[in-house]
Amino acid sequence: MKRVGFLTDDNGNKSAVRLMSFLSLFSSIFFATYGLFSSNKDTQSTGTNLSLIFLTAAYSGKVGQKYIEMQNEQSTSPNSPRPTNPIRNNPNN
Image (tube, rainbow, N blue to C red):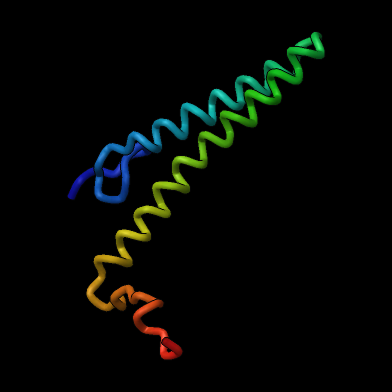
């Protein structure tokens, strides 16, 4: 049995997507904190924008990966129905 850690998946494999997500999350927290405590109004808006960009990057990669994994599981499972062509199977044609 492989050891499951903080940056590994359920099978014990190292996950680069999790590492990227955590780095983006910490960058987002840093820029948000910097923007909040800055006295310059331009820096505050820049810090907020960068924070939102990094926060989006932190989670969009993981959501995309999970979506692709779900699609692969559905297409490879033996009980899943085969995709049909709606043009050929249309009884009105």
